[in-house]
Length: 128
Image (cartoon, rainbow, N blue to C red):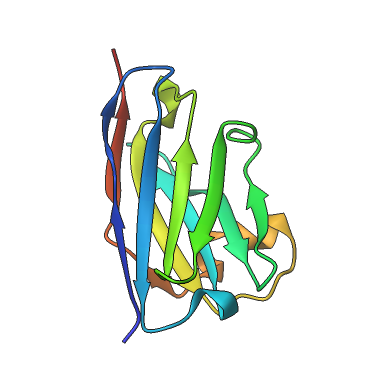
């Protein structure tokens, strides 16, 4: 049974950092794509970043490039999202998603309908 469990959310001041974790079970990360999405109140869920394949190819939304870094630890079957220089507009529920997704490029890899499995989400609030 595939399961994704997020952790690491919380309240942080603007300019601060957080690291989110997505612990996966039921599949190995080498063969699945794992992505982070977020959804702010009243807005659609949007792709933030993903990592795929043995080489660990990564993609990022323009809004987070240079600030967020996705990585994975295959031994722990866990994917991380390091978020630096956080802004109030980064406030959202962050979701981890996974699936057997072919690498068709960044637009496809950051679409919600590309993924089969989802975690329950973790709240990130950036506020002073």
